[in-house]
Image 1 (cartoon, rainbow, N blue to C red):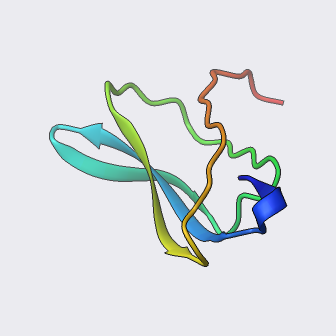
Image 2 (image 1 turned 180 degrees about the vertical axis):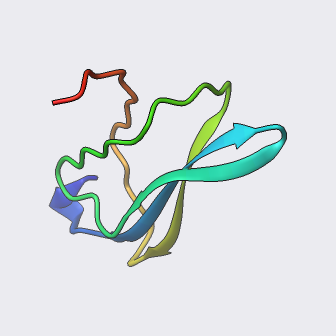
Length: 71
C-alpha cells in the first residue's frame, strides 16, 4: 500500500478460483507498508484480492504469492 497517501485499505480478502467459484483463502484488516499472510498451499490458475472496506481508493503497490517452507 502506498503509505505516503495514507492507509486506505480497511479490509481485504485473497480468493482463488476453484471449479468456477471464488473461494477465500486469507483475509485481513489492514495492509500497511508490508503485510505477510500464511495459508495452506493451493493450486489455481486464477486469484484475486478484493477490498470490501476502504477509505479512499486503494493504492496497492505490489502483491506477490510465494511457496515457503513452514517456519
